[in-house]
Amino acid sequence: MKYLLFLNHPKGEKIFKMNKTKEKRARKYFSTIKTIETIIFIRGKEYSATVDHEMFHKLANFDCFNCQDNCCGGNPSIFENHTRNFILKNYDEYNIKTKNNDILEEFGLTKDEIITSIKEDEVIVPFEFAEDEISNCSCSYKPNNSCILCSVHSIALEQQLSPKDIIDLKPLICSLWPLEILVEDDDSKVYITLPDDFTNSFTREDFYKIACINFSYSESPIFKRINPEGFDEKDYTPIYDTYKDTLIYGLGEQFYKDLIFSLK
Ligand code: SF4
Ligand code: SF4
Image (cartoon, rainbow, N blue to C red):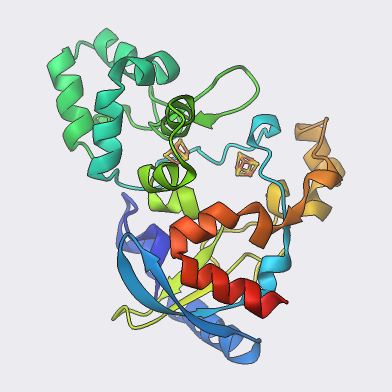
């Protein structure tokens, strides 16, 4: 089994391949819970899917503008060509937000070399600068001293692109996070769930300390030490609702229809 959303990770197989222990736990988990069977489409490819539907009642609050969590802290994906082309088309705006091109010029790169890097380098900046002088994900930026946002997402919003276009533009993992999608090695089936508060011990990451998907953690003193204003309880809504556009445009209308029917 593999972690589907991590298939394009710059670190390759050591990130996307599940180890045998976790695979065993995942198979056991999906054989003991209630699931629905449906189909999903990811980047135009159809998969047969087993879905841990009851998890979609879980509450979430993606209040990224008030979040101190650095969830764009690293490059989670080799960038796809359509994202690179969007950045090139918005070269100046991307630079105003990220400062990336100015940083690279300061280190002696010409504009042509920077354009070539956006077109060809895995994480759109030369390897030696990634997550170093160009800190966090190359695409991220800080609109102020309080939060980190995605330059591609922000430029797309400024240009009033549709939710579908934005979901298609960003790396798959960024659009579909925090869904956990496991895929058989031969692509014959995917398994979809969401991280449990304490994780179900086979997810790729430890989600416990992510307040936007864990309301009880958002009330903890550990969270409030970092994020003193906290998150507002009334902003937490079930993820099938909070994430409606993402689920429809990221996984397909049939998936969403089947999911909502199963939750009634
Ligand atoms: S942790 Fe959640 S709320 Fe915070 S930036 Fe990431 S997605 Fe947004
Ligand atoms: S959302 Fe944007 S900034 Fe954040 S990790 Fe993804 S591409 Fe990078």
